[in-house]
Amino acid sequence: MVGDIKVEGSGVRGARLRRLAQRLLVVVCAAELMAWGLATPGLGVGRAPGRGGEAWCGVLCVYYAARMAGIDASVDHVAVECGTKPGTVASFTDLARAVHRLGGQAVPVECTLAQLYAWNLPAVLHLQSPIGPPVLDGREQKPQKDHFALFVGMASQGDPRFFDPGVNHLWLIKRNPLDLRAWDDNLEKLYRKRALLVAFPPWELPKEVREALEKRGEWGPLAMSPSVRRIKSPQLSEERGHGTDTLAARSSDLRKQHASRIAAQVIEAREAELVEELGKAQANEKNEARRRELEGLLAIHKQRLATLRDGRKVFADAQGLMKGNDYRRAAELLVFFEDHVDYAPQGSLLALLALVGAEEDVRAMRLCCRLVEERRLKPELLHVGLQAAAGAATRRGDDAFLLWANGAMIQVDPTNELSGLAAWKLDGLHQKLADKGKASPASGQKGGRP
Image (cartoon, rainbow, N blue to C red; front, side, top):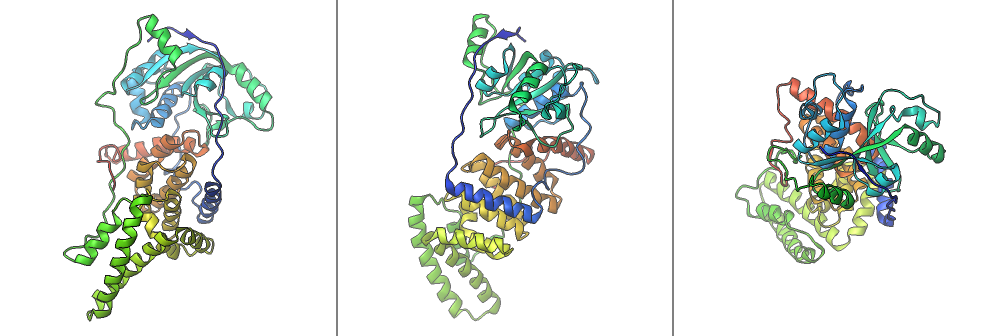
């Protein structure tokens, strides 16, 4: 642990405008989630555990920062790594110890809030009291006991986000838009000008901080500890195999192909060929059960071919069906986007929402895992997909998937307001699974496409 480093400076990152198509999709996604009652459903089970109090505030800050980096650590795990006695307040030294043991770098600094905003790196703030509703309302707070809160980072709109474990809040705290000056002034009064910068790989401490440490001989690369567990996608049941059926095997192989814009041209020709052969086989088949099976395959590949030829129309038609609550038919139309998340990620997200609405929960959860692995969607859109998939997992009572989904929400978009709720629910899920005598299911399973 090194002594405080004094720095000065300021600056805030700007935000990029979204493309029009993505904005429209966000509207559709939000409307559908609300229609299904999925806006905040699968974010966990039961009530958030009582982890408040000064003995836990710093631990919870490090816990959230670790989750942002995809570290699969429970609150209890972080508390143990701090090395403090139960009920004892963790110091910056204790919190830095936990960060190091979890595979990250941490250093205390003396700096302004403006400098922290410019660095846009997670930082544990030393405050006089919780940020809390009084500050949000612009009212004066009397100095209380020392407290820790986490500066999470700058949201896409350019506003700072804070995770304050001293407040029984379901969302991350953001500035009051009605009176920004008073809000900022109140926070400045609470902030003691000391913070613990936290950097888990692949993030690094700011250049000026590293240079200051190097001059003092206190800096060196820190490799990730082999014992640190990374969040990995949970394993889900696979679809039924195709046996020795040649046409079904070709169908399965084609649906697993990489579908970039160039590869799609090759796939289209193969789709057309398979549709023709499936049509002939169905027409000549005498066995009724086999005939129905071929009919199902033919319908899938006709729809896939239609998407390759006019994906925009298919996307629009599916949106219309979802507005009319016909989620099952919409899911059928979007089968190509379900199969190929690398082709048009926005279409795959719409397919996920349709699957949840149609109660095709396992397919929705499997698709969500692939979308998170690919990371081709904007964070705020991927967060919507995780919320929907968490709703499907809640319906199934799949705590292992919920554990993964809540962790992924924080990692994908830590400044999203619902990620604060996910953090509280994660702790509850860890405790629930521990009570059942289980290890963290999501952490011990193999990653890769489920």
